[in-house]
Length: 73
Image (tube, rainbow, N blue to C red; front, side):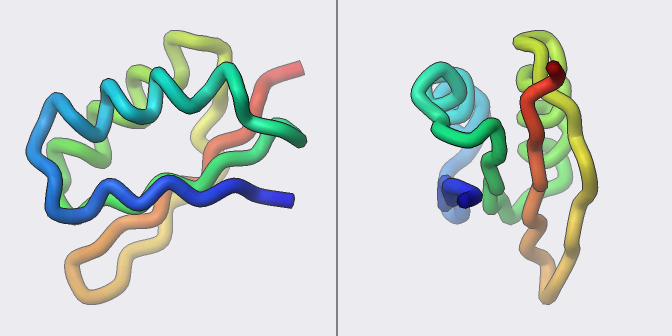
């Protein structure tokens, strides 16, 4: 099951900090992070990758981005 972290409406660095705080407790190795700026999209992806996660895909709809992260094995 994929966990969801909704960070829309928050300005950087808060989405990055919240994502880094959440990653260690994610069950199943899948996390979707919702953000609403390109800067947050890029920064969250980069931060997650630095912690051993991979950006599997990004969905964009009406200015919102959903980052699908998976734990590298």
